[in-house]
Image (tube, rainbow, N blue to C red; front, side):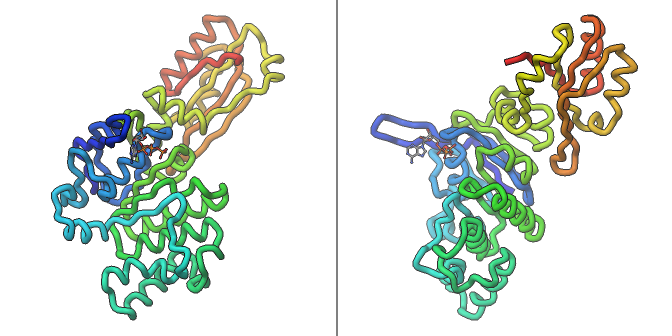
Length: 338
Ligand SMILES: Nc1ncnc2c1ncn2[C@@H]1O[C@H](COP(=O)(O)OP(=O)(O)OP(=O)(O)O)[C@@H](O)[C@H]1O
């Protein structure tokens, strides 16, 4: 488990003091994949780098598996850090060393015997699917393969925590999916706690169990990923989610719609996503509904449905229909032509 308690980080610059992290309190249970999302400058990297004390907090505590890292001596911290692996957006491999030697680096530094190192590196390269690439140099690898080396290297000392700094931002969508699948696999196989920073809600949706949204150094909202997608509260959270769920109706379609009707976006969440609510709605309200767009996606194993419907009827009937949907735990938003 990771606990950040009143974590505060300030940077002294020529222009004055900049706050990177503003009194953050956060608990990340063991075995979770925890996403931290925010725009550039929100403080994501600062939080992540405080977890292994790459950045020294100005104040506050960082407790990993009941050990407060902020009070350790240099030597104690060096040992504690072996249990916290890290991967980076640009992989940070040593270009003059082979894949084998990149992965072996931390083990050699820890003074492990050569035979143990060979065994461990072979295991790790197998785990990340690079058995055939031990003797290659980073320049001979694709971006996805480089990140696999980064992951193998980070796992060398059998860490309990893996910190991921935008691990897929430099990768194409297909490679991103394969790296996310690998992270999911090692989280399950190794019971590894993963903390991942990203500005992509798609990555959070695909991979994470929980998420925190950061703005101006603070965590403004956090929770289970499904709950955040189904019931976002803060405007910034809604903005991030809209970027993944948003669907814009083409102008030609708006031209054809009945001016007396309304276009509503309905979010079917939890059990509402599995019930025949549209059918019930038509029976209960007397309106007509024409579905313009719809999709159901699964976050974790729970469905979340988004439908855009043109509803026609008298104003009272339409209002009744909206109240009916709200009463069935749906999210309802009346859309206007932009
Ligand atoms: N070494 C530093 N010196 C001075 N200011 C810094 C330093 N590192 C970060 N900051 C400042 O702290 C704030 C938070 O930065 P941080 O890099 O943690 O945000 P971020 O959300 O990770 O952004 P990005 O996605 O661009 O990496 C910003 O205002 C940034 O300018």
